[in-house]
Image (cartoon, rainbow, N blue to C red; front, side, top):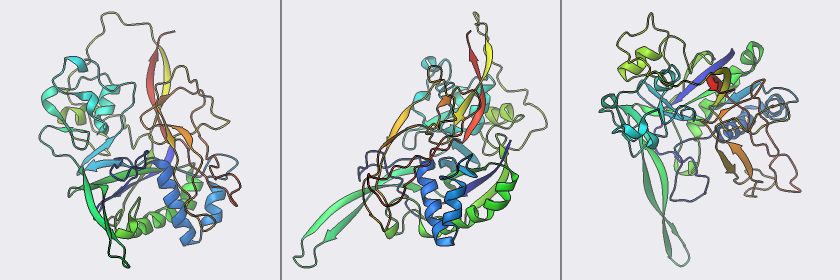
Length: 369
């Protein structure tokens, strides 16, 4: 178990997590872990912790002191997340009236229920097409995408160029949440305070694109302390929460809910060998110590690029890096650590790190020998 800190951000205006394509008229619904790490690192520079922070994380010879998950949406008491690819869409999805596969985000309690073999009831759930979130029937989505128009004006000639920029607009009570996982209690004691301070600074100055327009800001961040993996997959609440169609960061229930639907037995079950999978809550770049069995995982990858924000060369293109996406389930003998490769352009005067440290939750994985 690792000490961890959940942060909840309630936006006060539009947010723009840039899409992988870079298109101005597109926006991503996930604020990815590598971007969150870069934002926190920039804030650490302003707070006077820059060199020590890099030494403890991206430039560390061992395990990083702090790892970040990506930021996922929440709506009131419902925490949403990208589900493990091994259990989503759920079994029997083709025979259901709900298009489960179209949901990109599902409640945390649904993941717990599916890992326990429970069956989701069609009349308890709906998929919000705008946000791609699975929600209890009748609940609205936490956000919508929108286009905000702007115009560049040439003060000399008076010529104008109108353009649109995509953003996320959150309804009241909704926002984004993420996990900061500390390597041990010593690192939690050292870095919990600076991480909180950095996130408060970013809440005031903004996350993501169009910060000069006031986008990406939030209310005072809310912090919840705990341990991983219990904060994500608590052991005793899955039946209760899934049966009632609600869940956020649950507390242990006193007993299981007897009304939860039991799992459907398989008439021809294979002979299983128990093996743990690692469900990624962050982007992941494998490091030299990661013993990943790429032939048995269930994963997808994405090419991450972008531009440098540095006085030594602002706007220079970073090298592209293929990373494993959130929701992937990896098979690795000794867990996952990840790495932070240098993606600076050739000849750049200093390293530019892309954080690919894994925040992963062990989940059961049944394989046929």
